Length: 194
Image 1 (cartoon, rainbow, N blue to C red):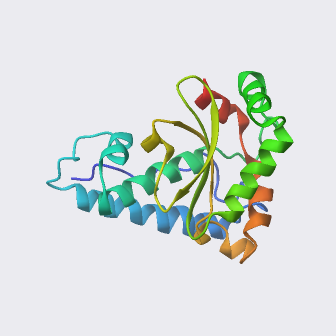
Image 2 (image 1 turned 135 degrees about the vertical axis):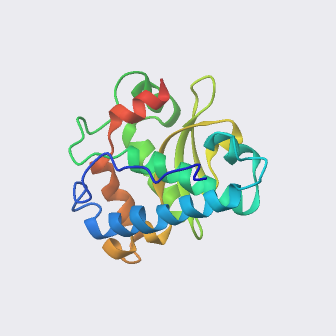
């Protein structure tokens, strides 16, 4: 029984160009994420995690189940947060206020976020997350880790695994991170914060 399915992208594969190419989307979504889904479905058979929702699996599992479940959760949040035509170029409302309070300004937040993404050693993710009181945190998470494991709500993430950017940016991870702001759909990030 297949428990999980490959998510459908909320946009056409070429919609994020030139920031993320159709070719990268094809490999990243169609091969890497698809493999995590297939692997997790195989690993869940007969396991105590078979009936749990994805987030609970990520909070409770370890080993191969955690690695594949974490990558599914991370990638779903990642792909859902982008738009080929974002409605606005920066957050507004309560999230904007929280960013200003926590980091001083939106520009200071972006600088810190990009720096954390660029300096994460090896493969992983940089996250903006919130605690139960709405306080914001930027964290570096290695491999398949996710802020839900720290009881935080994930809001925004940039994938710094090489498969996320190597076809388009080769080894220029900082350039990739700087370009991603152009396609962030802040309406989605604000809803996650609410």
